[in-house]
Image (tube, rainbow, N blue to C red):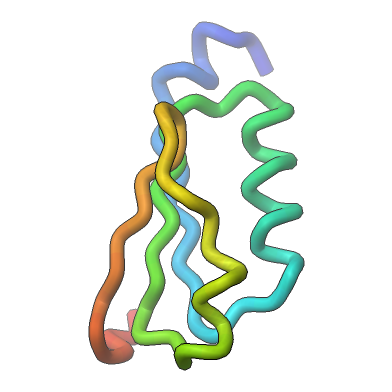
Length: 70
């Protein structure tokens, strides 16, 4: 995919009780060249919060206190 097209796409990654695969997914999206990734914690348990990425220039983290589903 052309870089100029990728820069126009926002990727939303919703997650409930993730594991280490969430970080791998976010890193893969960054490696491809996506620059606007929104990671949504959809009411995850406390023990899963460590798997959510920290916010950065290219990653925004949103948190719902309870699961909101689809």
